[in-house]
Image (tube, one colour):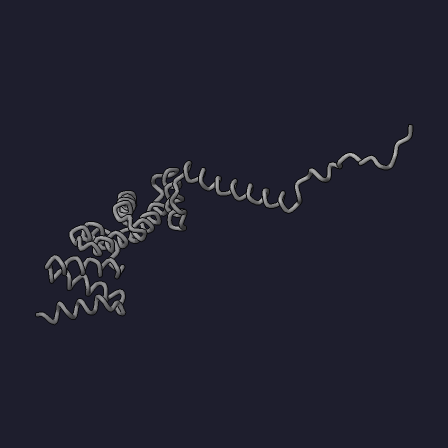
Length: 187
Protein backbone atom coordinates (compact mmCIF):
# COMPACT_ATOMS: atom_id res chain seq x y z
CA UNK A 1 0.00 0.00 0.00
CA UNK A 2 1.07 3.39 -0.75
CA UNK A 3 0.56 6.51 1.26
CA UNK A 4 -2.05 8.89 0.23
CA UNK A 5 -1.71 12.66 0.34
CA UNK A 6 -4.74 12.91 2.58
CA UNK A 7 -2.76 12.28 5.72
CA UNK A 8 -1.95 15.26 7.93
CA UNK A 9 1.70 15.85 8.82
CA UNK A 10 2.72 15.66 12.47
CA UNK A 11 2.51 18.97 14.27
CA UNK A 12 5.82 20.76 14.19
CA UNK A 13 7.84 22.02 17.17
CA UNK A 14 7.37 25.61 16.04
CA UNK A 15 3.78 25.69 17.14
CA UNK A 16 4.76 24.92 20.74
CA UNK A 17 7.40 27.67 21.20
CA UNK A 18 6.68 30.82 23.21
CA UNK A 19 6.49 33.94 21.07
CA UNK A 20 9.67 36.07 21.19
CA UNK A 21 7.95 39.12 22.61
CA UNK A 22 6.56 37.12 25.52
CA UNK A 23 9.96 35.63 26.30
CA UNK A 24 11.49 39.12 26.29
CA UNK A 25 8.81 40.46 28.67
CA UNK A 26 9.37 37.56 31.08
CA UNK A 27 13.13 38.08 30.93
CA UNK A 28 12.80 41.82 31.69
CA UNK A 29 10.47 41.11 34.61
CA UNK A 30 12.90 38.54 35.97
CA UNK A 31 15.80 41.02 35.77
CA UNK A 32 13.71 43.68 37.51
CA UNK A 33 12.71 41.32 40.32
CA UNK A 34 16.30 40.20 40.84
CA UNK A 35 17.48 43.84 40.88
CA UNK A 36 14.86 44.92 43.40
CA UNK A 37 15.54 41.78 45.42
CA UNK A 38 19.22 42.72 45.52
CA UNK A 39 18.39 46.12 46.99
CA UNK A 40 16.10 44.51 49.56
CA UNK A 41 18.75 41.98 50.56
CA UNK A 42 21.40 44.72 50.68
CA UNK A 43 19.12 46.75 52.94
CA UNK A 44 18.69 43.79 55.27
CA UNK A 45 22.38 42.95 55.42
CA UNK A 46 23.89 46.43 55.51
CA UNK A 47 22.99 49.73 57.07
CA UNK A 48 20.12 51.12 54.99
CA UNK A 49 21.20 54.76 55.43
CA UNK A 50 22.06 56.54 52.24
CA UNK A 51 25.77 56.91 51.59
CA UNK A 52 26.53 60.61 51.39
CA UNK A 53 29.92 62.15 50.65
CA UNK A 54 30.16 63.35 54.25
CA UNK A 55 29.35 59.89 55.61
CA UNK A 56 31.90 58.37 53.25
CA UNK A 57 34.51 60.86 54.51
CA UNK A 58 33.72 60.03 58.14
CA UNK A 59 34.03 56.31 57.40
CA UNK A 60 37.33 56.89 55.60
CA UNK A 61 38.54 58.93 58.58
CA UNK A 62 37.51 56.19 60.99
CA UNK A 63 39.46 53.67 58.95
CA UNK A 64 42.55 55.90 58.98
CA UNK A 65 42.24 56.55 62.71
CA UNK A 66 41.80 52.85 63.39
CA UNK A 67 44.99 52.17 61.44
CA UNK A 68 46.84 55.04 63.17
CA UNK A 69 45.11 56.44 66.28
CA UNK A 70 47.52 59.41 66.34
CA UNK A 71 46.67 60.55 62.80
CA UNK A 72 45.81 64.16 63.62
CA UNK A 73 44.88 65.02 60.03
CA UNK A 74 42.27 62.25 59.90
CA UNK A 75 40.94 63.10 63.37
CA UNK A 76 40.74 66.81 62.50
CA UNK A 77 38.92 66.21 59.21
CA UNK A 78 36.59 63.72 60.83
CA UNK A 79 35.84 66.20 63.63
CA UNK A 80 34.97 68.98 61.19
CA UNK A 81 32.66 66.74 59.18
CA UNK A 82 30.97 65.45 62.31
CA UNK A 83 30.27 68.96 63.53
CA UNK A 84 29.05 70.07 60.10
CA UNK A 85 26.68 67.11 59.88
CA UNK A 86 25.12 67.70 63.29
CA UNK A 87 27.15 65.19 65.30
CA UNK A 88 28.61 67.84 67.58
CA UNK A 89 29.61 65.61 70.49
CA UNK A 90 31.48 63.22 68.19
CA UNK A 91 33.16 66.16 66.47
CA UNK A 92 34.09 67.68 69.82
CA UNK A 93 35.64 64.36 70.86
CA UNK A 94 37.62 64.07 67.61
CA UNK A 95 38.95 67.64 67.82
CA UNK A 96 39.79 67.20 71.51
CA UNK A 97 41.71 64.05 70.60
CA UNK A 98 43.73 66.10 68.10
CA UNK A 99 44.60 68.62 70.82
CA UNK A 100 45.53 65.82 73.22
CA UNK A 101 47.97 64.46 70.63
CA UNK A 102 49.22 67.87 69.46
CA UNK A 103 48.41 70.63 71.98
CA UNK A 104 49.53 73.33 69.51
CA UNK A 105 47.30 72.24 66.61
CA UNK A 106 45.89 75.66 65.67
CA UNK A 107 43.25 74.41 63.24
CA UNK A 108 41.77 71.99 65.76
CA UNK A 109 41.80 74.68 68.46
CA UNK A 110 40.05 77.14 66.15
CA UNK A 111 37.40 74.62 65.06
CA UNK A 112 36.75 73.51 68.63
CA UNK A 113 36.68 77.11 69.86
CA UNK A 114 34.18 78.08 67.16
CA UNK A 115 32.03 75.07 68.05
CA UNK A 116 32.01 76.04 71.74
CA UNK A 117 31.32 79.69 70.90
CA UNK A 118 28.32 78.63 68.79
CA UNK A 119 27.06 76.77 71.88
CA UNK A 120 27.82 79.80 74.08
CA UNK A 121 30.23 77.69 76.17
CA UNK A 122 32.80 80.43 76.70
CA UNK A 123 34.79 78.75 79.48
CA UNK A 124 35.30 75.84 77.06
CA UNK A 125 36.41 78.29 74.36
CA UNK A 126 39.15 79.52 76.71
CA UNK A 127 40.26 75.94 77.46
CA UNK A 128 40.32 74.93 73.79
CA UNK A 129 41.95 78.06 72.41
CA UNK A 130 43.95 79.61 75.27
CA UNK A 131 47.23 77.67 75.18
CA UNK A 132 47.33 77.52 71.38
CA UNK A 133 46.68 81.27 71.13
CA UNK A 134 49.41 81.95 73.69
CA UNK A 135 51.87 79.84 71.66
CA UNK A 136 50.76 81.53 68.40
CA UNK A 137 49.89 85.15 69.21
CA UNK A 138 49.93 86.02 65.50
CA UNK A 139 46.88 83.87 64.75
CA UNK A 140 44.18 86.51 64.61
CA UNK A 141 41.28 84.05 64.50
CA UNK A 142 42.33 82.51 67.80
CA UNK A 143 42.84 85.95 69.35
CA UNK A 144 39.35 86.93 68.21
CA UNK A 145 37.85 83.78 69.76
CA UNK A 146 39.61 84.62 73.03
CA UNK A 147 38.24 88.15 72.88
CA UNK A 148 34.72 86.86 72.26
CA UNK A 149 34.97 84.44 75.18
CA UNK A 150 36.39 87.05 77.56
CA UNK A 151 33.76 89.58 76.52
CA UNK A 152 30.92 87.15 77.13
CA UNK A 153 32.40 86.14 80.48
CA UNK A 154 32.48 89.81 81.53
CA UNK A 155 36.28 90.14 81.46
CA UNK A 156 36.38 93.38 79.50
CA UNK A 157 40.11 94.19 79.85
CA UNK A 158 41.17 90.74 78.64
CA UNK A 159 38.67 90.98 75.79
CA UNK A 160 40.08 94.34 74.67
CA UNK A 161 43.61 92.93 74.75
CA UNK A 162 42.62 89.89 72.71
CA UNK A 163 40.70 91.96 70.15
CA UNK A 164 43.68 94.34 69.83
CA UNK A 165 45.96 91.34 69.23
CA UNK A 166 43.61 90.07 66.54
CA UNK A 167 43.51 93.45 64.80
CA UNK A 168 47.30 93.78 65.00
CA UNK A 169 47.69 90.69 62.78
CA UNK A 170 44.51 91.04 60.74
CA UNK A 171 43.59 94.72 60.46
CA UNK A 172 40.59 93.90 58.25
CA UNK A 173 39.00 91.52 60.79
CA UNK A 174 35.76 93.47 61.05
CA UNK A 175 34.13 91.49 63.91
CA UNK A 176 37.15 92.23 66.10
CA UNK A 177 37.07 95.92 65.16
CA UNK A 178 33.33 96.11 65.89
CA UNK A 179 33.75 94.37 69.25
CA UNK A 180 36.66 96.60 70.21
CA UNK A 181 34.63 99.69 69.30
CA UNK A 182 31.72 98.40 71.33
CA UNK A 183 33.90 97.70 74.38
CA UNK A 184 35.94 100.88 74.21
CA UNK A 185 32.91 103.02 73.44
CA UNK A 186 31.43 101.99 76.77
CA UNK A 187 34.30 103.47 78.81
